Image (cartoon, rainbow, N blue to C red; front, side, top):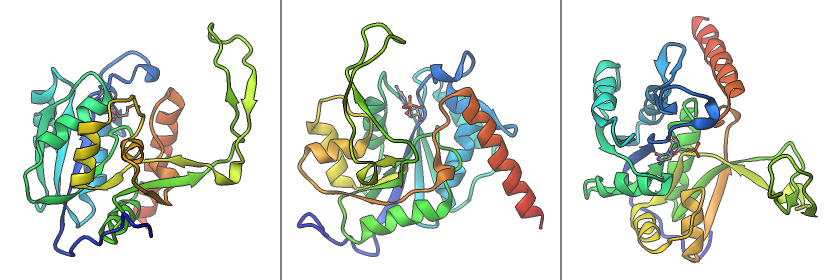
Length: 250
Ligand code: C5P
């Protein structure tokens, strides 16, 4: 591990922040993405349960659509969630980055480890959550779950008009690339500093910690931690849930 490493005491408490304030336009028209149902239960409730399934997580902060905090609060009240986990709901912002920052602002002081998890990844297995927490406890300031890529990736010069041919400018070596998921785990002070100092648009929180010059480590992700983005992802999510129900039945 790098010089940034600093083991966190075993007593460190873990909170999860779930940004759920996005509209999810790529999924098609309808309710905000996090509130859409999977097997009859809102995606957000699946995501909250997935994080609360970890015995290490004692608080979940849900960042709701700016005008939907009351609705999200009553959803959480209406669904069975573990007694040992506390819940808070705060209104979100215009960007994912701002929503995460608003979630961090709401964290009580006693939490030293923070997970940030997309509501749009409702089916992450608890073992992945625990592996991320463990790596932070062992001293990494930032941890991402990541998977090798099936596709070869090309860097292109993006076309001005979507759909026009795009010149390829580079082909990164696939074996060195990873697709990054959530929950991403952080030493709380590091993540707060990243959100205070990094102003560039980044698509994940670990990217902000990289901008601070700190080492981010990747641990194995899981294919069921995929992000529900497009209509086909809803079909896949329903299939995963159906398989889990079958397996639970035996
Ligand atoms: O849009 P994308 O799929 O990247 O969003 C990832 C997560 O960030 C989703 O859970 C979404 O609800 C959340 N988000 C947010 N606030 C925004 C935009 C996105 O909490 N303004």
